[in-house]
Image 1 (cartoon, rainbow, N blue to C red):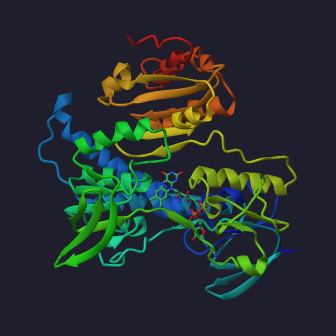
Image 2: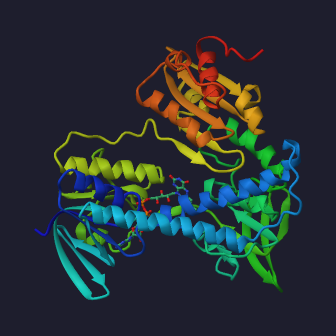
Length: 460
Ligand code: FAD
């Protein structure tokens, strides 16, 4: 055997898993055909958040006068916005490369093929290399789905992959799909003054989260100038001169929405690139590789993690699954649990959720308690000029926190306290009685927690 662990794919699943394997003293090889960091670092989490920051700053500049500031003419140089994003991405990819080197992890740049248990072949610049590995961890991630509608392959129509390469802003953008990725792009482009329309087939945006959040978010997005069409299906995209026409149909009939660019954000599917599922005899469920709580497939010494296995397609989930897989290989007693997985949506305002939604608790028939605290009653939020939104906490009949949703400033960071609470099965009272610094946004979390057993203090 050349290595104890061979990992196929160097995204946040694969590379984190390689680092943990090295920490545990296992010999490890990581095979990556593209760039280290995978989708998250190169085409996902990080580049979009770099754009979100520029968009937020630009939006704030519009309100400068409310803060007593006068900044004259404001203008976007989108090329420079994108260059900043690229610098951040490159620095982080370089950082991951350094981490690999420091941990003595061999990284092979090339596309791997896994057809036989115990070995991976890699096509590199120098030819094909055959590597013998004791354990294989499959972490090949996911790719965007291009929905099969007429015109989906026209120039100007693209997925998030292509949009992150764009260096100019269009005048009009149509986003197909009102999920997380679609709404993040819609918020970014709107902030830069692009005319944005979002088309969603389902009756609501963000259909998987607590219903109250999209109900509150949708009017805010509309107020910001984003056109939103729910319960609306896209029939076709066609080109008329320089313009793309997105033809949609809702309950009332057919209409045309003109656009200069069309973003397809209709989900992602696992990438089985290089994995011969059939030959290997890998068990699948609806095309997705099946794993147990230790991330083992049905084949001995073969594990699968991250977007590849569907489920919650998020970077931190991929990393957590990778750590479980490699710790199991090292002989530790571990299990992947999904009860306290945070999920963040970087719209304006930001959204973050964890655990059960209110509709799930309602449907379960169990008694539950709910408490909400608005940011309009939080001093720090007012000082920031970001007082829209709320913290919502759900608890069981004993007051144990089982779910939470936050919409508002820094929601993605604020959720961590409630993730820990759910992970450790804390009661709302435990959070409420914890002293929080003043004036801070986490006080809104504390106040909402007070409301589970009684009443928030700063709410009439
Ligand atoms: P990936 O990151 O997809 O990595 C897989 C890697 O495997 C790729 O680098 C690929 O080149 C390589 N590979 C594939 N096949 C082979 C092969 N045969 N040989 C060698 N290498 C191979 N998640 C969040 O948590 N927060 C966010 O804010 C967020 N924002 C996102 C924004 C966008 C626009 C997108 C598209 C995604 C976003 N995600 C976000 C999701 C996140 O990027 C993924 O969940 C995460 O990257 C999955 O990690 P992974 O390691 O499973 O797969």
